[in-house]
Length: 344
Image (cartoon, rainbow, N blue to C red; front, side, top):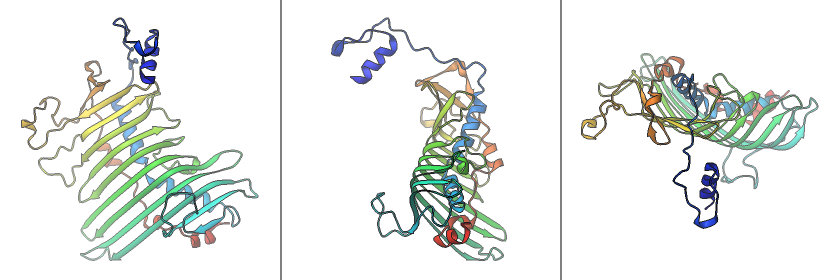
């Protein structure tokens, strides 16, 4: 009933309790004017920002702020915080938990727990190659800064993993990331990330070397950045195959799935991609819409919008600029020993 009342209020019709109904003369909501908006460029920008919404900036932001802390602020412990989060008490790792301020004016408030692992074997100069596996996990409700700026703030969970094999004539890597939380502050703004921070519930899986592939599934909200001065959010469910490692049946010009942009008035613009797949001729798909042409059809409020035409993002740019920023091997390990050694 609350939803009905809100819907009626938006139309300007009177609400008369449980018997209220939509008037046949209710005016349809006017769609925002997109004159002058380059949707191709907007989707390109949104894709780039989504690719940066990984566990990497969160891990590096936590590390950067702790490296400028002091030995007595914040307090750092081995293991998980007691009573602070739903984690197995037997888990290892390190956490800081404090509400303090250094002599230089840097404050730490809240807590953050993290755990990184790294294993490696073999030699890159051999035919078998060198194999590296790294994982990182982080949870927190924390903020770090001073009177002039926020250095790092994080509330949520983040984890990622890298598997890489490098040999004399061969390279293969896979990277996965899962983030459910909000992050902002200067030390979280790495190259390519959204200025001002973001909130995400996003899964990313990418591969490279002998085969380029990408999967993006979830959503991202931009805290201050506005794409094309109007879009503040994006949602997606995409699978894209790059040219490297593609078979003759793969469409490398566009993904399978959809990508959506939301403006500040909560209007969603859905771009749906339907490249031809094996057996698609028997699926009833419109051959014009399902062609492997690099373009997607725009839907507004669930209906195809012919006035907006099709959107044709530059998916090749994803591979050209590097689909994700691979962590260095040493990034996976950040221990109590590192803090004691590096803290000034």
